[in-house]
Image 1: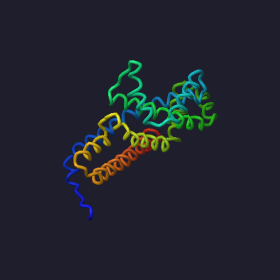
Image 2: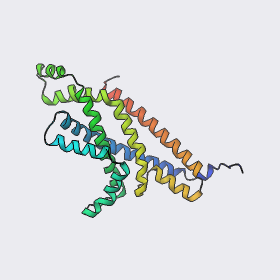
Image 3: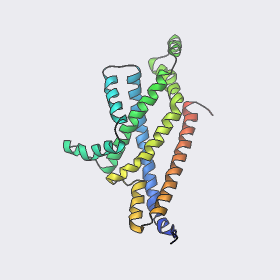
Image 4: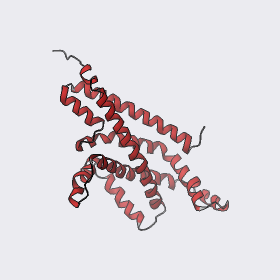
Length: 221
């Protein structure tokens, strides 16, 4: 028997899909801001070998990069309450994304910092630039410029990985899709539209990050 497509059964719940997509984007935005900020701190400590914090961040990076994101999420949501720290689904999802992106962005940004020629630091010193000015204009901005494409790809990977947050009932896009599919049993249509939404979000985030990179990091007009 030929399969009868019925997208109307899914589209009548389009508000749930859009709310889930908006939740995913919000989750990604907060996770990106805090995760990249954590990555910048970690990259500086690691690149300039500021002890003992460089070693602490080294352990943190290896721990996160060599364990699955879903295990990190479960540890935060199900494991921490054993120590008396109970987080909501949303708080656990944000914390997991920040910790995960922070580890990867630490290594990505560190590579950019280490690629800065030492002569540029000497030139900044010769121009009597303050340490903050040197860090901002000679170290951080050029470093981010070098690694921005890699960092953008990692942010998108984290956004797509947020789908596993549905396992702790975080009401993001995958959670909405699972809910709709369990009601109408139109799995093909539901996940086809969900796939399209993830694809659209990934393209939009990539375009947005490319614009942010050109406008605020490379200084292009």
